[in-house]
Image (cartoon, rainbow, N blue to C red; front, top):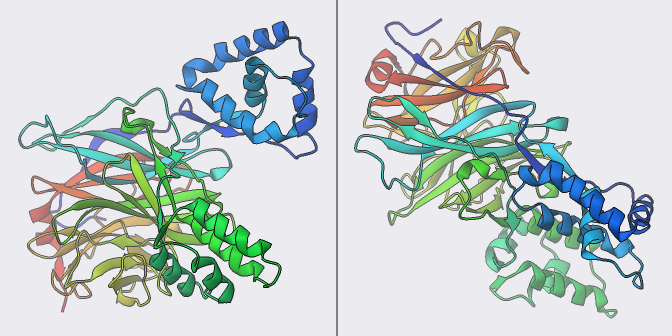
Length: 486
C-alpha cells in the first residue's frame, strides 16, 4: 500500500547495532560476598596485584578513556567493607575496583526508534547543507534501553554524510552544582498529592534555590527533632522527586557519538525509551532542545523530559499532571496562542492534544484522531513532534493494523488551532517491506522525529525494532496527496 503518485525514497543508509560499543557499570553482588572478594585481593602480594592489574589493563585500557578513574569510583562504592586499620596501596584499590566493574554493550540487541533535529552548531557547513543530530534508542542485555547519538550532514540535494562514530562511549557525570527551584518542587509535590505538614517543615528551611545537599540537611534536621513527628512516606516522596529530577554533563571535548544517556534514577532503572527530540523556539527567540521519553522501572512507566542547549549538559525533569500519562508524548516546537502544546496517546489507542501554561504540568487532554483506516484499526499515535509548514502542522503518525503490523502515516493540523485536523493521508507513507519486516519485533516501521530540509521530509525510521534507515519524500507531493478533512 502507498499513496497514489507519492514517491517515498528509501536511502541506502542503514544504522546498525555494534556490540563493541561498551560502557562500564558497577558490578556489586550481595553484601555478604563483598568482604570475601575484597579479602581475596588483599591477600595478594603487591607484585601479584601489580601483575594482575597490568593484565586487566592490557585487555581493557584501550576500550575506555578513563579506566583508572572508573576503577577508583567503584572501589569507593565498596570501601566501607575494608577494615580501617588495613593499609592498602593504590594498586590494590584499582584492582578491587576492577573486580566490582563490568562492561555493558549498550546496543548489542538493537539500535532503533530514531529522532532527528538540527545540530546546534552549524559552523563550517556549506550553503544549502545542514548538520544534524540523530538520537536512537539503544538496547542491550536485559532489554535495558538508553539514548545514543549520531551526527552528520544533509547536503543540498538531500544526500547524507554520516560522521564516523567514536571507538569510545561514555556515560555522563551527575552535576551536583545545579539547584532546584523551591516553588516548582512544591508544585510537583502538590501534583503528586504529597504536600503535607512534613513537606512544609522540610521546605520552610530551604531557600528559593536549593541543592540536593541542602534538601538532605533539612530532612536530617527534621528527623533528629525528637519533639515533632514526621511522615516517612512524605520524605520518601521528596527523595523520589529529587532523584527523578537531576542534572548530567558530558565532557565537552568528546564527540556526540560518545554520549550515552543510560538510566540513572530508580524510575528509569529498566530503560529510557523512545526519546522524541524537538528544537524549540521560545518567545524571545532562544532555542532549547527538549526530548520527551518514557522512563521504565520494570513495573510502571513515567513520562520524562530531557532539556539541553548543547547536547553536553542535560536536565532530566518529571512531567506531572493528570494527562501526563502513557507513552508517546511529543512537544510542538513553539508555543501556540501563549501555551505549550503537546501530542500524546493518553489511552494507548488514540491521538490526543494537550495545552498548558507550564511546560512541566499537563492536566487536560483532548482526542483529535481515532483509528479510521484498516491499517490503523488497532491503535494510532504520533511519530515525533509536529513540523511547521505554511499549510499547517505536519504530524508523522503511526498506525497498527492486523498481525500487529506498524505503518507510518501523516496528518495536517491547523496552524492556529492544532486540535483540528485539516488533512490526512488515507494510505500509509511507509509500510515494512520484505527486508524491513524481520527483526526483534517483526513487521514494524517506526520513527520518533523527522525534519524538513530543502522541501524534503527526512524520516529516520526503525525497522522491526532492531536497526534504523532513512527515507525522504517531497513536502509538496506529500501535501498534495493528502485528503482534506471536513
